[in-house]
Amino acid sequence: MALAATNTRQFNERLVLGIFREKTRRMTFEYAMNDDPDTMGMYPHLVFVGPRGDDTRYAHVLKTVAYIAVDENDDGFLIEKWDIVHHRTYNNR
Image (cartoon, rainbow, N blue to C red; front, side, top):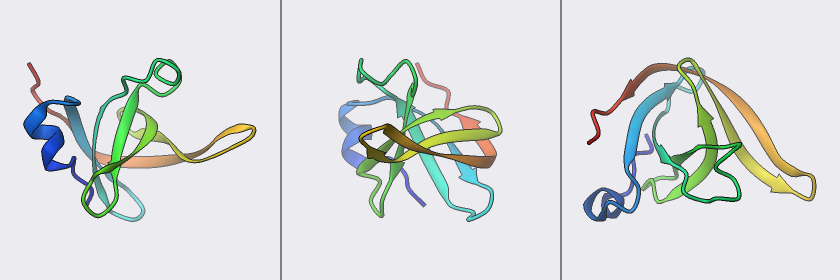
């Protein structure tokens, strides 16, 4: 499970938008808005990863799939398509 780091929630550095479960590996992830102007057009979200949720990956989260940038090379990002289930959005202000 990779939830947003506690300091993210406390200081509102990023507004956490929702949570989903990756279908195959059954791992749960939270995600927030991407505020990086260089990547936010193609990848409007950041998915929290890592054991404490303090790392992020660029992503585009839709209702039943998420496109996750898992690596970067000279040609750009290596993208994985994740099938997702139990997608919930939080009731943000």
